[in-house]
Image (cartoon, rainbow, N blue to C red):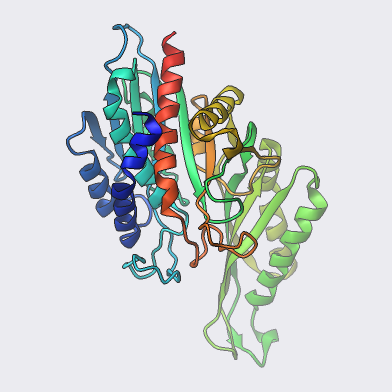
Length: 404
């Protein structure tokens, strides 16, 4: 039996697990129900399991039984993230989220399921492994730096030595034909920073703004000034993307509020731009506030670094996809994505790559299908077996090369 045919035999079980995960999404670093389902999927398999302390992570190590005993055993790490998003689901699926205000809108339920499927497949092919595989079931990818937490707790050395190679997989609900794998060498995804701004004014009556200190007009100026700053202080060929996602002020239309607040996400593609942003954004906002005689609190947080893939490992992923599914199933991306990933922290420590897989429903129109993070995003369960097979074959292939 081949890895792919073995994976296809698991398709029904994988679909069942994915839908159970989808119905009970959990947010952040603490996902007890999700962890329970993962442990259930690993039950009876020959893994050494460690649970996280600062997060409900699961680290599972499989000791291969193939080849001759060696003092230095190759180690391959496979990662799947598990957390959901604070979104009210609007898909109408019969297995929609049962948790109010939470949804697996980014496909992490598929990632968890694929990695659980790979756990079964790798255990079945254990005699072909001449080293050890580390499975990294990670919470808190959506802005909580779960990868950083797991790295601090030792996931990269869970097998007893540092992993030699690391692979991650991410599904997309739109943007490419169903079943298409995609990646690129070098910068794959942007760096990500977070910006929180509070303008402190003085409240008053809406009819007499001169007797108050209006924070609303000041924060409105800041929103537009941030966009002008991007176009005038940064090279258009080294792009920066800044989007305000939260803007809050006031309780009633005739009351000038005491304060106004915004939150923004900031993306960049070089370490130089990321460092410059941290310097010039607060300067700009503090200057605007000072010009109006108001105080401002600026919290600029450097979050995830650039996701940079290894050339050799990305080439290996392309070859493995070709061996499993045919060369037409892999596309080399021309440009990076402006999304960000905390798997970047793993790739900064271990050579590896990150591969996208389109789970766009087959009947969907590519031009109108809802993308990841949309309350209407849907993902095709048919790709689950392919993802599990790719995880498995990447580990087997890289392990065989490392043992030579």
